[in-house]
Length: 484
Ligand code: NAP
Image 1 (cartoon, rainbow, N blue to C red):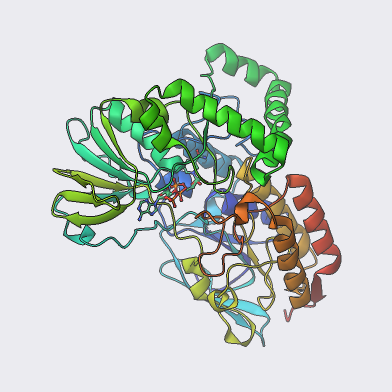
Image 2: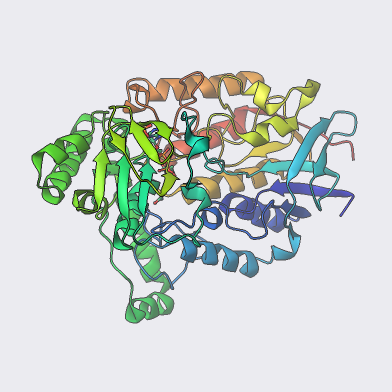
């Protein structure tokens, strides 16, 4: 496709799909460009055994697309990907998606007051509005470990899982102990693998709970949407306490620490192992893991816990930072997270004066109302700067961001975020995180690796986000008429 459209959305995960729905409903002509051959974003890419969402499924659903058919309180990843496919069909946006086409260049054309675009495949040449919904946990982080490239077996990141390789009877090294590893390791053990687990720093782990929904539950949800709303409201009901605990509020944090310690004590009987699994970071400084199966798996005979980072690889021997050697490893699984500080899409986008988004964000992401960036007219970034909740469903943020983009673009003019407003928003984030665990010094993807600023986490509740967005709409933008 060539030519001009009102709006181009890059990425067809939840964020891009939501933006497309909102903009189409507002009467804009929208094209979504997706580099893969299916929608789904993180839920398409992450297919490792055990992948699931640790937010209750009825809360990790779009408010306008309730789903009575979830098979369990915590939905498996494949079910969420299938749900998003259904949302795409139900909302009529599938025909607007161009698959297998990646953004290669985007430049603001000041004379024409529009975005000039280039894609590896199909996609419009120009658009009034550009929405980047490229995901924040999309690019696997592969650590630079001496000898890793010479490892004779397969090296695989959790987000690039190859299900064709047998697991049973093999000896697998898993590097990392975040949410992905916590879901994967029990499944590897259940499938008959022997696991050597490299733990650089123990995570705080709380019980997850949750039950399966049977046919009767699903029929009841389908018959009465009020039941879904009630389950959702119940899940949301715990948000204040969860937020307070992660933000370091003394009483809530102490309750969470006690719950995590009791969970560890109950699931791991051996004191020495328990000690090695006990976190030393402040509670909440990085994303809290929810799991009922990780500790029992680690305590089983099938897992060797190497309580240090992977430091070197010599042939099929892996060496921990402790000096311990682990021989005859068949496969290495990197559960090492994602490139979050420097998002690859930022290098492709040039705003006013030819400055790239990557240059603008050289000290970490910044935005106004979490979506707009000074110097980048009519550009909106979803799931980017300060858009991750520490305690609840990320869809709550994405729904708000997509609605904000619809509102801001409603005039049809050119929206510019004021630089002072972006500086003020950045300063407000710094104030909010001051004294919280998020800046207590632990490594986490919430922070920019270069500046140490908290650039990915939204350090507030959804009410706080609503206030920040309202204030942005009031004060942070100038609107001029477009050239067309
Ligand atoms: P992550 O939380 O960033 O964890 C990466 C892990 O790799 C950490 O334990 C880290 O150790 C370790 N690591 C990194 N480099 C290492 C090295 N050189 N040697 C040893 N260890 C190393 O990544 P993730 O587990 O993939 O999760 C990322 C995010 O995805 C989560 O926080 C969550 O937001 C999302 N997610 C969600 C779910 C869900 O259920 N909703 C499931 C999976 C993922 P340090 O802690 O010492 O840095």
